[in-house]
Amino acid sequence: MGNGSTKLDKALLADTDGERYYGLENFGNTCYANSVLQALYFCKPFRHAILEYHESLPKDHDESLLTALGDLFASISNQKKRTGVLAPKKFIERLKKDNVIFNSYMHQDAHEFFNFVVNECCEVLVKQHRREHPTPDGEETKPVKTWIHDIFEGGLTNQTQCLWCENVTSRHEAFMDLSLDIEQNASVSACLKQFSSNELLASQDKFQCDACGGLQEAHKRMLVKSSPKVLALHLKRFKYLESLGRHAKLMHRVVFPSELKIPNMTEDADGQDAAYQLFAVVVHVGSGPNHGHYVCLVKSHGQWLTYDDDTVELMDDDAMNNFFGSTQEHSGGNTEHGYILFYERVDGAEWSGSGGGEGSRGARGGLSEALATAQQ
Image (tube, rainbow, N blue to C red):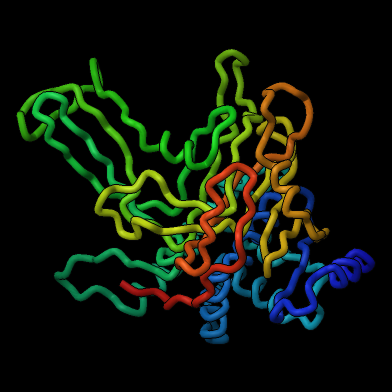
């Protein structure tokens, strides 16, 4: 990687404000982890918060997946050279210790890894908070909101409308990412709208309406109630197909714009006009769900880069179109497809309004403030 690192360093902009660009060694099958780790590292709110947390730890702190992740991010950010390669050995060892699913050389799913890392790190912070702030005897234990929730958590409203009396019942729930069904020749906006489309509850699935007191047909839909600072979207490319009798990868073309507004929000939603810019894409390479490879595309200082384990290269903006998918499902061509998309909320000054169209290229920048540590 020595020559490649030098080549990358020369190709990068002269001033990248102290940014470090380090590939990660693959320990046999850990591309799923390397790709998501790069996306999280270039998620500036998350990186800044975890480095702040890492610096605040006492020397005799308990080891966890969160501390291992902090060690890795600190190691990258403190490198003297701008480019290079690191071995995330300590983090991978901790991952395999904490979850037996990842303690094998089988192909793993990057989205499952992302969910585990986020949830496990939240759990570490919650336990730490409750040790430091125990609930007084006789009082109800309250949920703890951590700085990870502050970054990734959004809110959903599950609305059910009785078709007899038209009463609407709403139930709220939180999400850390959204998993979207995909269709051929669609866009992310269309997938979000489909996520919130009406589902008819009828026959054996009728709704018990509290307003009119009976089992009634109803419409059910899910809308976004509050927008997160960082929006993680999982495109459900792996699906069981009855015609094949097995799980298969959907090669559908799904356009993900560089700029996005959430089209399926409630009328009274927090952040109704929230605008997002794409900063990372985890890409699955391969024709099936049980094999293949993962790489990560990240945007830094207006330049897109490809992270393929220990290899890091600049990428032309126009190349992003190659990761949308194929217009012909069984064309046998390109198998590199966007799988997890990471968008960061931006203010109006950074929104160009050009990201809604297919193939459009976005502007630079995003949020970079560090967030407070665990709070109720």
